[in-house]
Amino acid sequence: MLNYIWLAFLLIAVLVGGFTGQLQPMTTGAFDTAKSAVMEIALPLAGVMAIWLGMMRLAEQSGLVQIIARALRPLLRLLFPEVPPEHPAMGAMVMNMAANMLGLGNAATPLGLRAMALLNQLNPRPGVASNAMCTFLAINTASIQLIPTTAIGILAIAGAKEPSSFILAAVLSTAIALTCGILVCKFLERLPIFAPPPIEKSEATEGTAEAAPSVGATSVETIQAPPLTMWGQMALWLFLAAFAGMFVVIAYPEFANQWPMRTGAPWRFAELFPDLASQVVDGKLVRHDMMRVIKTLSLLAVPFLLTFFPLYATLRRVKVYEQFTEGAKEAFGVAQRIIPFLVAMLVSIRMLRDAGVIKGITDTIGPALGKIGFPADLLPMVLLRPLSGSATQGIFVDIVKRFGPDELISKMAATIYGSTETTFYVIAVYFGSVAVRKSRHAIIAGLTADTVAVVASIALCWLFFGKH
Image 1 (cartoon, helix red, strand yellow):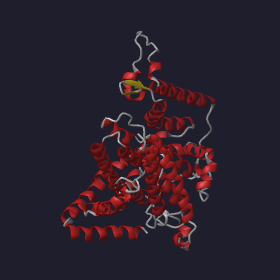
Image 2: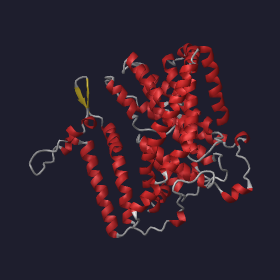
Image 3: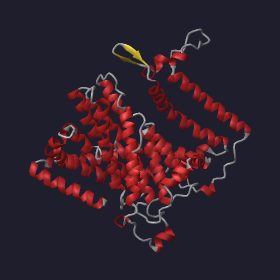
Image 4: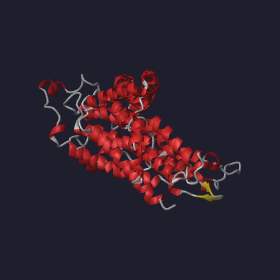
């Protein structure tokens, strides 16, 4: 399916661009995007991946990934019945989902690539997406993000009275989209049209090692880390207590301000973290306890993981520096493998946009959608969201500037932006990292989740804010 979609993007872009006189801008944009895909996405991603692939290596060698997977075994076995319960892929997928929920995009993508590589170890058909891969991709394209920080920031900068008021609508929208995406994925994988090809004898014996090298492959049976000693357990509890204390003083600085230092001066945590403490609305100071908790968790998540994994591995007598570098060295190989897929997809999307295809669709069906409660000004954003994150953000900013940050259409745009994903980018990066060329039903499941998220966002915003 991906072959036909990519070809259709190119043909439609060239034909429309030829008739609209946009061939030159389209050509220039295609080469600019190809350069950007390599220099601004793939190469910087290698550095970020080096950190998280190294951390994942520590988590695997210390047995932490298996502990996490074991704790969530019932849910994971329901979603991924073909993946062994103790396989490291289970823990990697859980960590990816947790990073997505906390809005940690710089951690979610490397962890997702790690999970995809581990799933590829179980895939008997090189280059063909397995059922587990498709389900995992559907979850990523509709994953619940508790704090859509970018959308909140844009509304706050524009002067919104309550920039976080749309969060409930966004969370509910993604929950509905996630459920639909998984159900559609499970339904489509049973249809004969999406059935995987038969396993060739050479594939069954050789596996996927030649088709797509695994990222720091680790087998469950090779992990022989000794258990934690009593002193190790005490050190771990002290570490967790320290972070719990940091959570309290950051999330609730008004309490921390009462704790005197040796000099007798109070700790001014409210000055260090003013955005976490409260918000001024109509001249009144308003507390948002839930927002404070979630924001603090997001703030502490990365420092916690970057120290917890090495500490836990050390306490289980893993050679942390050696294992970290062993995992990190695979990052450049992953970045190198995704470059062709990333360039192919992003160039076709840029050509489609520069040719005026998106604008033409908007002008054609926008007025009809407006009659059923779907603002026509949101249509360009909805059409571009699965294709380009930066273009969608630009349209979102423009909507907020034109209509005002507190208007219903701006809340709808924020909810859509916070509850949908750039599906084709995710497909290019995740499947490209393991050389999957036949995506089977993954695209349909991802786009279904995006569509459901948009419809749910519009409906929920009308329900929550339509009377105001």
